[in-house]
Image (cartoon, rainbow, N blue to C red; front, side):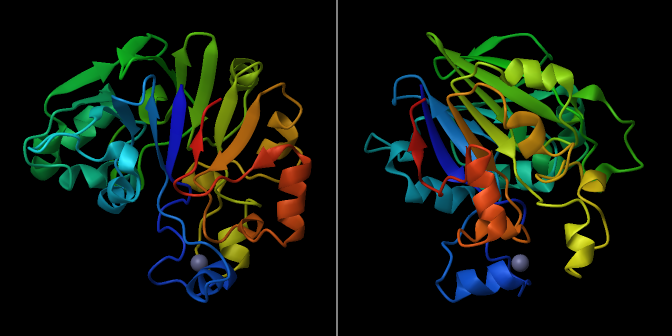
Length: 290
Ligand SMILES: [Zn+2]
């Protein structure tokens, strides 16, 4: 079981095109490594790959990782399956790049497929498609994938239009042999059922969007709390570090880290607390074989 981190940042990436916060400025100055928008690829054999989410950065993510390059002298791709964990623009906009003789199936929950079907351009980008059902395992790229609901919300572009649905935000359990990876790129709260699913996993990739809930407001970068955007913060008694840090997991990694998050600077106090809680923040292009 191989997991390739294609992008470790939240929407906008690091640096974000219109942001001059401390982290974005450091990234432009070469003091922090740039990060693209959150996505992983997973494979059982290194031949066929499952792409989880298609971000606006997908073209450069594929080019930066030879594992995903076409193998034959004609058109083709080792990407056999694509799973969309939500209908957020950051998760689906890359489908518009993955055109021209596609060879993969798109798997997503019904509310996500319905959302994409409302948009004629995106509708064409999800064929062939398969509706996945919560808690029903299926095979993709040689892995057994079990989707499960996590606390979340409909995407911003559909707020107030579509009724909230348990499948608006999902996590994935990826299995091969005795190895089990839990992938949760967006999550509004750490529940008991999530903790018990994570316990004993070979690796966990978890939503590291914000250090604190009012981070965007405090930094003058936005007007909504993390929770209102569907992300539990890392700090605090109900935060991800406190709630997940004590679990027995082979490796704990943060993904979908927003450029505002002070933990992205490895010299910060917050980065020290992340490490002390047993979490790491992977680089783009890092491959993990849990
Ligand atoms: Zn920034």
